[in-house]
Length: 319
Image (cartoon, rainbow, N blue to C red; front, top):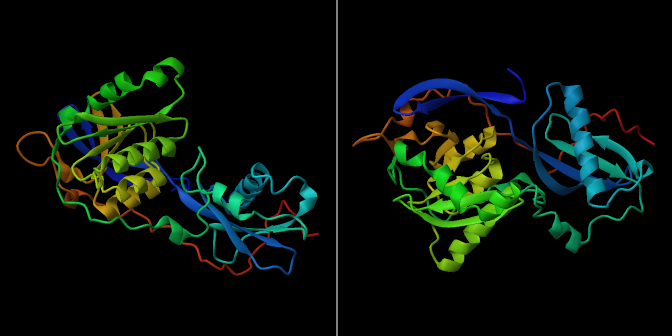
């Protein structure tokens, strides 16, 4: 099986027909970027970003190094190849990169470090360790509630598009929409950033005093990534619906939280990745998660906080 995709069992719904099959989801795993000044300096966690790992170790080394260096360039920390002494990956850890910079290169100030926390591209960039990604919600979800008719779910994208005024003019915005148990539109927010649209939506509900959002449904106009599902989990949203595909890590978070995760909602079709017991076609639940064989699932990516030195990535020679 490719390192870039993961096979998962799903329930596929097409109108009133339900079938179980195996689909492939893109693998999403964290890359921790650490920096140090000089060969004798200590590595300091700078940020974590999500990425899809490459197929081979050689390709992964090169792509992870490129990603780390590109991040440093984009943040103005590195402006010349001469400022980079080496790029290493720790022993036994394929999810961390240590960039060694020449002494004298200015590392982030507190103001710059805070700017890593939130960009329009990634809702997790700026967390410096994996522990920072694992916030725990204030309440657990209520099993099997709410109950949602699959026939009603299929009309939500129509409601979303009708309410997206700016998207209709530009075609360039992501949207996040909140629905109540009767599938009435409660609120909608748009933004060029996927996670920004969800943050705006959650912020509006905080101001309205409606958190936690038990019994509500979140619909996003794009894919279901880790950071979006985690944001929904923190707001105690039981049902997450995406027009696009989920990632492997998004599915893991949804399962651990007891959420219902629906992807590829288009016309009369959808894939249900977990939490199928909240969906119904008649008087009772459609199916239950116990019917799903999840033996092919893989463990979550883990990363040590203080990685040991490991192999050197080939494209940045030691000076």
